[in-house]
Image (tube, rainbow, N blue to C red; front, side):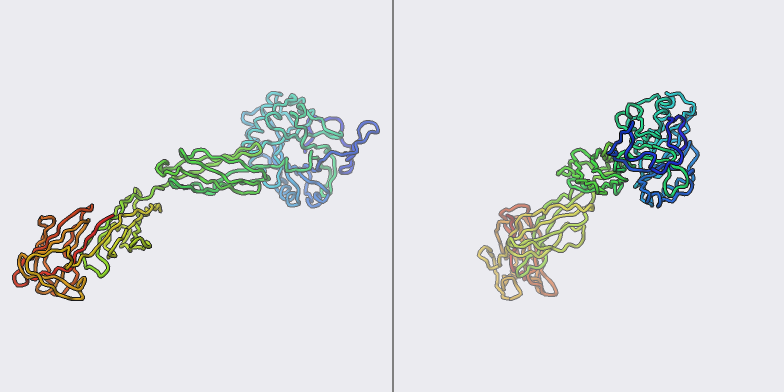
Length: 567
C-alpha cells in the first residue's frame, strides 16, 4: 500500500525479518514484558507492486488473509487484482479488496469512485468486507472530506449490501478528518488502522466509537515467504475472520408467481442465498389478501430455503380472486433484505349442484329393474368439467353410473326395484370438486295386472306367458272396456304388450284425458312401458285405461303398473 500522507515517525527498521519486528511477547517500557499475547491472526496487504506472488508459500508461512488492491480513483484497476484474488483464495486465504481513494471537489466524484470500485471488486465466499484506503485529502477541507468519505461509504454499502471498513492512520484521521466519530457511530465500525513500529496502535475517533481496531497494519517493511521484497504486514483482532467477512444474504422466490385456491392453502419456496452467512433469518410477508395468513417454516442456519405456507379463509367466498403483489422481508444480524413475488388467488369454489331427481321413464320393464331418468344440475363460473353419478340400492354400496360425457346432466338407467338413492358430484375446470349431493330415497314397486288393487270394467281375459311381468296379462278386445289403478306416489308407468293385432287405448289421469296409446307392432314386445306420468311430490292419483276397440286389431293387453314414491 502506498505510504500514508502523514505517518508517525516510528517505523520498523529496514531488514527486520518477517513478524520479528512486533514479537508475540511485546516489550512494554523498560524491562517489562507482556507474557500473554493478544489473540490475533496474521495477514498481508498487497498490490501490483509486489509482482508475482507464490500464494501457496504465503499460506504455508502462516498468513491467514490478504487484503488486495482493486481500484484507484474512478478509472484504474490494479492489473494483478484478479490473479491475486483467485490464487490467494485457491491457497486457502481469506481475501479482501480495497479502493485507494483520490478524492476531489468534482461534483459526484465520491459516487463515481464508489461505483467504479463496486463494479470491479469480487465479493463472495471467503471474502472480507471491502475497504476504503484513505491516505490523501485531494485538497478538500475537513468538512468536505468527511462528506466525501461518507458518500463513498454509503454508495458502496448500497451497491454491495455491507458496510465497508476504513483504512487510515491515527494522524491522518485526527488532522484530515477532524478526528470525527460520526462514521463509526453511523455503523462503519470496522477500522483498519495503519500504525507502524508500536506495540499497540493508537485508535482515533474516541477508540473508533468504542469499537476499537479490527485490522492493524503494523509495518510496511515485512517479509513473507513467496513474496520478493517488502510487504505490508497486518493483524486481525480476533481468532475468527468470519466476523469480518463479507457476510450477506439475499432472498429470492423459487417462482415469481405462486397460486393458492380460495379456501385452501399452498406452499411457496423462498430461497435464502447466503454468502459467508450462517445465522437464521427471520422472515415475514406483506401484501396478502384480507384474512389470509402466511407461516414460514423454522429456518436453521444451514437451510438454503424456507417454505412459506399461505392459508386463505375456510370460506372460499371470503377471498377475492386476483393477483396480489407480495413483499417478503428477511432480517438477520442487522441486515434486512426483501424480495417480491405475486400471489394469484385462484378459483377454489366448487360447482353448485342441484341434487339428482329420479323419475320413471319409457323403455322395457325388467324382471328386477325399471327404466328411470336421473336428472341433476351443475354450474360453475369457470365451467363444469365433468360429473360423477352413483346409485345405492337398499342402503348398500355406492356404485358408479356411466355417463356419456362431461356435459351430461341426465341419464336413463335401469333402476333396481325397491328402495334406491342417487348422488352426484361435479368438478370444474379448475379441478375444484363439490361434495356429494344426494337425492331422496326412491321406491319403485311393480303392481301386477292381477293385483286386487287393480279393478276392471267390461270383458277381460287372462293369458299366461313367461315373457310377461309376473307371467300373465289381462287383455280385452271390447271397445270401452277399462282398467283402473288408484295409488299414492310420485310416478306411474303402464307396462303392456305390443304386437300384431294390438290396437289403441285412451289414458285418463285423475279423471282427465291424458292421451292415447297404440300397441300395434309387427314384432312382439313384452313388458313395454307405453305410458308414464311423474309428479314432484307424493300424492294420491288414479290411472284409467279405456280400450278404443280399434277396427281390425282391437286387442289391448295390460301387463303391470310401476309405481314410484320418495322418502
